[in-house]
Length: 636
Image (cartoon, rainbow, N blue to C red; front, side, top):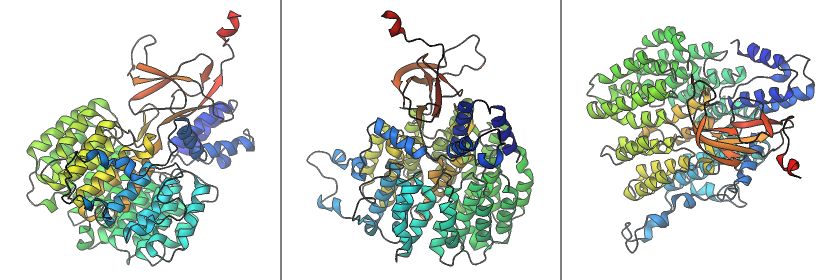
């Protein structure tokens, strides 16, 4: 609630140092904080500065920096799904596994849908691909029904962050005669604006009428689009639209679930307006019929409620009491979700014990054990971002795999994935790789998607090899095959320039919308058959809220490209060490822009420039060091 005032006070304190103000604006942009500099700051700032600060907080130039990074690293060339699958590598010489060998090229709708996602995630943010943005593209019509929705939406993902050009690309599909294409275009507009603020508010303008309309699929897409576009913005207008959808008696549970999740994303971490949003969701849980609450998408409603209380600690207690009054087993599910979210990233040992205690109960019927699956994910969520806790949690997961009932075992791969998103941590990859051949199909499918989440955006060659092997192993299983493809899409996300880890600023700050986006995907994996492998595969696009370029770009005070020498190495924890300990180890020296992986840290490698902020990641403002003298001049 008091965040705006405190941010404004910090800007006022730094009003004489425009470089510092710009660096602060970049940090706010990375944290997806919706702070309006033009309205809130005093007249000590001139209008041009306010406008440029607002642009930086709204990530208006993110796309431009990202595309420059792509050019600099020479990965502009658009990739086709086949470049990712590399199916020529998986055929063993002289022996084709597919029987006749000729049936590899048959287009199946499920395979095309998988390629749609791969294409979208791999070319995300690059504004070009080879299936959808080329002239005379016919790819849309190689998908059917809901596949067309996801295919059209992926145009928004390819154009991500580039609002102006993206709207031009999507516009024509908003007037299509095909209902699914129109719905996909709605979702695409939302994805396009993910994390980017625009004066014209295109997502709100285009999606409002569809969210309030009569048509079910259009409403689903529009509601998810609003959730992705305005994640973490706390915008009242958006909240009102979503609340009216949840309160609508005619809305089916799938729509209500998506609306609840979007509502949680918009007011994530208890932004102003979260209380009314929470009351609205609880009201719905109390009024809904049992058949409605049995719908797998009702779980998303609980997740939305949890996100409103993300990292809010004991403030969640009153809400937990309210949820306990719901007379359906979903109330336990919601309680565990709320507890896990409220203590997310806190490493609170007591809450971890509570969660493990939930898992210890032996429940024979699978459908009554959903709350235990969440408890397993909750352990990972609470210990996330804190190294000692995560390591201890890994041991706990081993025990769960040995001693617990199936529903919990099915959630363990998801929990493992959540504990180290985008890190490509080998201990976890080995564990998931073993589980990916498990005889229980849900465990193996979750493990495959888990592999994708752990290695999201790392291009890790070992995971790539594992996934190619799995695509051979499960060549005949459509469901597994789809999971393998999705995981391959995650692995090569943004051609390896985009990550999903919710922590930034040297692993110090947790980004609410990013946690929400990852959890949305993991929660839908709790019941893959009726979500991602059925008609609501477009839930995957919630992940766009957690996608962020893992780049370090140095700029001068005018925000122009300014290459300089940086050392990148493994981060070393130096808290409490005396003297001036080295903060990184095993470093390499590069010229910025460079890519940073989750466990790396950077420092300037030259005395020529001074950094304005304390942490080098994202967009970093550097200024020239007035005391520096070029050693080359002295030699003359």
